[in-house]
Length: 121
Image 1: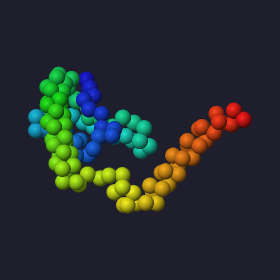
Image 2: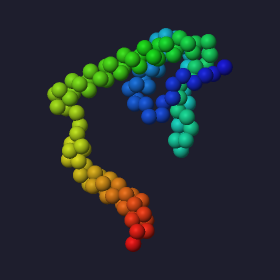
Image 3: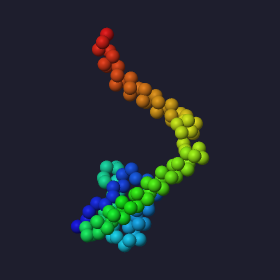
Image 4: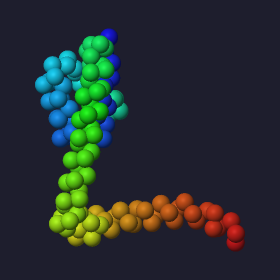
């Protein structure tokens, strides 16, 4: 019976590719489901054989620990070099989009708070 191993919603493509390669290298039989045309289904990696679940979860846990330490060291290295993107960098790349986001947040805050402030007067 099939069993879900790893949900792919919000997972970076490089991480999903590495997990696929890990499963292939270990000869674990799996298949994937996509989010569908409207993005409402569950994108995930499933195991065809339930008996391989324990082995796959152990490998996945070891992989995620290794990836976590790798990403932390990469972040520290980029921070040390000053290569991390800051809010100012994002603003300078696309100022119009940033201003639209700020305007949208301001409008949402205004319409959310205004009815309560209006009750006092």
